[in-house]
Every structure is written in structure tokens, then in C-alpha cells.
Image 1 (cartoon, each protein chain N blue to C red):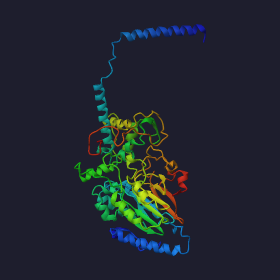
Image 2: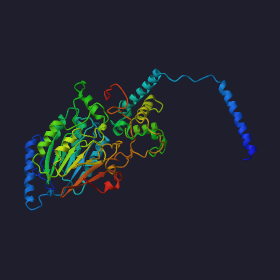
Image 3: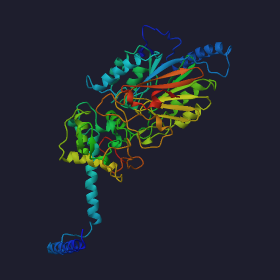
Image 4: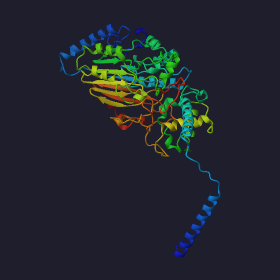
Length: 172
Length: 348
């Protein structure tokens, strides 16, 4: 690269930046004040409701997910060895790079002999919310898990989140 | 009921009922008989051998565990248990007997326990049972005891004292909560259920154990079976027994105690003081290893392929040798399950 070329590139870059800034300033202001404590609590409650629902599904509350009595929790207590932080990854059972929801449906149709969940359904989001919530704080490492079970985040003798009873088991 | 315990009509290995004493509801009397027979055999040998050397006549026994049978007819777990029975029958040398380490049933139902007993009746050797929580909490062990006998037992065989204890007893959480038997069972079925609290052997079992070993010598070979491990492995999943320290204290007078347990659905070894401890492969599904540091990490089995329904499953057998040496052998359906160190036999 010649000196002249570099100089011209720098100039054109600067000009582009000016143009972009100009466009940005023409847009209506979209920023807002940080969420209030009440709003954050509401959002967290909505998440925990999904986690709660996911936990029930994980333990057999939706009968169509299984024809042999098994539930996800039989093999994956506390979502152990589900390792949501490793997805997407290549799944040899599927022969392609798969998302967590793909593997959830693989388990439902295979070992559980059940009817798969619509990937866009609230139930599937709840399943993912449950598994992911138990692994919160874990480093994202897409690809094969090297350890069979990653640490889960739980409180001393509970599920890791507050909830009311469903008849299956709950934190006091 | 002793009559309910399966004993083959043909006794090819000459294990008569008199030598192979099974303990029923009349535990006290039968234990005394067992003790007397064991003592007599011992005294004959002691006269001609080093009195410090335990007089074990080498033999093999097998363990089957955690079949979790459902009521659904022709369920896949029925077939895996049947395959497990075939596997045990083909072990050489043929095991003298089998210990079932708990959780025949998934939901504690009579039909599930009966299905298990029927499949296990194809064994060509006697079998003894201890209960798991899945067998117990629908009716607090009423059907189980009617079918398999006393919840605590012991017997002597070829110089070794065998003890089985019920270790899945929890405090009453159901009465204050007005729970139905099915709700109680459901709460116990969930491994990570926070309702039930820790399991234990409790006063009755500990009293049985104290009396049972009171008159035994310190060099008596002792093997004990419980559903959960007699050490603190992962209490959140009840991979523990709350009063295991008391058990280890009662058994501390013995030179060596071998402990075998179910519940964990995986191979796992540990040693505390004079007690070595080995977890059993199940026949229903394997469980992942909890994220805790292990003293013997090499005892872990390999990662399991979820597409293979028998992967991670199997039975195991233990060769007991003179001097009370034990070699644990895993008999998984997939040979690649065990790492090389475990495949060559684990010294217990």
C-alpha cells in the first residue's frame, strides 16, 4: 500500500463516520432510563414462572411427552449432563450441529417415546429456561462438553429458585 | 416370609438351606442359628490354621440393582432385567447367590414388585433383597416385606458374615402435609426432591446391627449391603446415608468391611477407615456423576451413549478369596463402559 492510498482510505473512513453520525442524530431518541426495581422484579418473576413450568415438564407433567412413563428427570436430575452451555454443538445422534431444543426433542422422541414439542412453543422455551437457569453463571462453551456433568447452581436443599408446590416437590 | 424367597430346586453347588441361612421375620432366632453354624465351621478350621487368618472359602456372589420396573406391559426395562438375569446366570464361576440392592419398582406398586420377582425367579441361584425408596413409599414397605421378608437381615456363608439393612427411611413429611400414599411416593420418586430430606437406617436398624455383630470377632469378614452409599457422596441426590457414621462406628471393630450399594446407577469406589464401598450398575438407566471431587476418580465409568438403551447398564460380581480379599468385576452390557483399570477388576 502506498502512503497516498492509506491517506485516502483514512479520509474516506472519516467521511463515512460523519455520515453515519449524521443519520444517527436524525433518528428519534430510543434510549430510556434503566428498568426500575419493580420492572426487574416483574421480569424475573416471569422468567421464574417459565423455569417453574419447565421443571414440571422435565419431571413428567405433560403426558404426551412420554409413552413409557419416563421423564427427562429420570436420566437428568437437576438437568445434570444436559449441559445447555455447550449448545449449539455437533450431535452424533442427529448427524448435524444442533441446538438444545433439537436435543430435547431427540430425547422426547427416542428414550421417552413421546410426542416432540413445537420448537416455537412456550413449553419448549420453558424446558430451555429450566435447564439454562440451573447452569446460570456457567461459561458458554459451544461444542462437545469435556466433563460429563457441569456444576449446577442450586441453593443448599432446593431447586435453585423459589416456587410454590405442585405436588411434585418444592422449596419451603 | 421365608417361603417366598426363591431357592432353586436343583442345588448344583451344594448350598443347602442349612448352610445358606436366610433370615426371615424370625430374624433373631435365625441369626443365632447362622452364627452357630458359622462358629462351628470356624472352630474346626481355627484348630489347624493361623487364628489371625479369616477362614474364607473362596466363592463368588453377584449384585443386581435398580431395575425401576413400570406397570406398562412389555416395558423396555423388563427386557433389560431379563437380560441381566441371563448375564448373572452366565457368570463363571457361578455366583453362590445374588443380592438385589433395591428399587425393583419405579412407583412402589405391587404389580411392579411381582413383575420383578417373576423375572428374577429365572436366576439359577438364591437371591436376597434389600429395599430402595421406590419399592417402599407407596405403602411404607407392607407389600415389599410380605414378598421379600425382613427389612434387616444377616447370614453367614463360607466364613463371611453378610448383612442387609434398609437405609432409605426418612422422617414423616406426609402426615403434616396431609399427603396421600401416591403423593408420598411421587415425592420420593424424584431424585432431587427437596421434600423428603435425608435417608437413614434409623434406630431399629442400628439396634439390629449392634446386636448382630456384638459377638463377632474383629477378624470376622463382614460384607454389608444398603441401598445408598454409607458415605457422604452427594447428599442432594441422597447419595448418602444420614447415620452412616454410626454404622461405621458399630463396624469399626472389624479388620475389614466391604460395603456394596445401589441407588447411584453407576460405578463408584470409596474407602473410609476399615470400610471399602462400591456402587452398583443399575439395569434401568445410568446417572451422571455429580460435580464433586472424588477420592478415587478412576472408578468412574465412561460417558454413556443415550441412543443405546443398554449402555451404562449391567450387573456385577465379586470374587471373595482367602484372607478376605475381594475383587469386584463389572458386567456391563457394553464392554467399553468401564475404563481399563476397572475392567481388570477392582480390589475391595
